[in-house]
Image 1: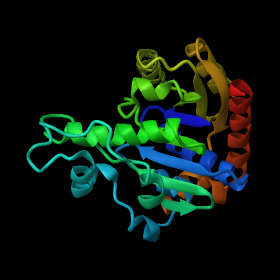
Image 2 (image 1 turned 180 degrees about the vertical axis):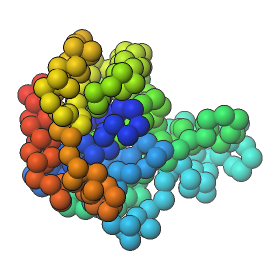
Image 3 (image 1 turned 90 degrees about the vertical axis):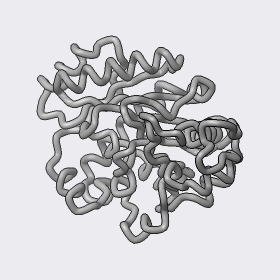
Image 4 (image 1 turned 180 degrees about the horizontal axis):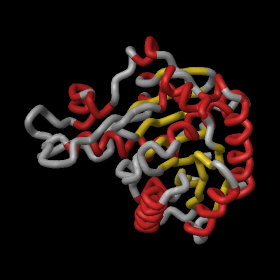
Length: 258
């Protein structure tokens, strides 16, 4: 199964991605977790230590590697380079692993006036296409709201785009923005997951405000999750409740896409 998770910053999408990845790993599944959010926090949500992360560099910052794979030279990124560079060794070579979950950091692509945008983008999009189309593992992508790393040729192989929302209008606006982008990319399965739910009124507000999107389930407001984040721990390792909630969300998703 290939899943992308998006939503407004701070809404809890990284928590969902990390706990879901660990649940699948516990089942014995091979999982590729891709951190495609420039504010990279997926490692701690999975439970990967800071010591492990010292060995891993975001791909977008690996200038010499990008030059080697794309054929672009320093100062010429805007000119000629390979649109389909070799990426098949990246999941094993440029990742760290914990309990069956292999994490890859994409990093931030410069957007305004950066001459290296095209070569970096070619490498990262080629990698995304490769893991979505060619690999048979579970793939979970922690996206920023913009979906920049997804290309039209990739999304037809994606099983689901999950938008995480909290009870609030700004979060709903982001969800509709993601929905519009998903339509441009021809993503057919878009789902909502509620987070930081206090009561039935919160749940009803989300359902009523986003009634044209399928609702997979929700995660309750949980101080233990915030405490785990402060300590750099995975909620999966510290709280049984969120594990049970995400298992239910994953079950609902599996029923939708089977």
